[in-house]
Image (cartoon, rainbow, N blue to C red; front, side):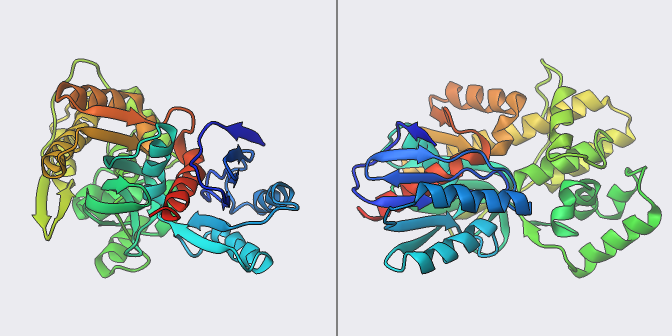
Length: 364
């Protein structure tokens, strides 16, 4: 296990079990933090057994005060947390929301004590309302967070099958109009998905930014079916054109202290551009510019309310360098102090965030 420079002054033993898809756990023994190896997707039985083996070695002859895990009750890491609770009955289980953990990991890395505006954009994460989050704007400080804004929920027909069949998201967002742009899928399959969306069958709601990138890639024919995670977004980024500053419109509605960003207009205008045979590189770029525009405008609006210029960005979507450059430059021009993960990319930072939240909950 590798030792880490991140710690809080809490003399407790905390095990943070991390995420399920890109697993990497963390053990805090007093002030000393040690990361476990990168294990991978826990839905693979071999990986799950590997996690249990590595954790067992790490906690041998130790006492656990807190076992931190993801909020999702069905995750394998959450299941392991329950098993460890039986082994250490005096320990406390602490479930931490996925996107809160993303933002908290930056608070830990940069040793931030004051509250920040956090933008967590990724593919999936179990939300406090039991929907799938992934396009979140939150205020975070210590062990606490408050959801301030999010991308409007859309249906995800077939659930996680979307990851390998991103064309489904096009039909979810554009309906029958979107079906006309999907060429390498049978009409029977498209009719089935449209019926699922219409009746809400096996179509969980998601606010995921990652799913929007999937949809954009499928709509443009860049990646209708993916052979690996994020293939569509990766291909979409590659065709972006420097120097193109155009954007598509979106709608922002605020109700009861929650702002909802409706991205449907983006896709409707992309469909219109497709009909008019606009270059795909231009459309891909305008899509990226639009997501950046959403982040910058929403952050600006929220900062006025919370009187802070500190913004942190985390989540897999920010592995997209074209988007991240746009966002950082845009926020920088407005004099925001922008921070990102330094040494724990993607979901490898989830355990660090879980530790930070659990650690600070002892002090709150």
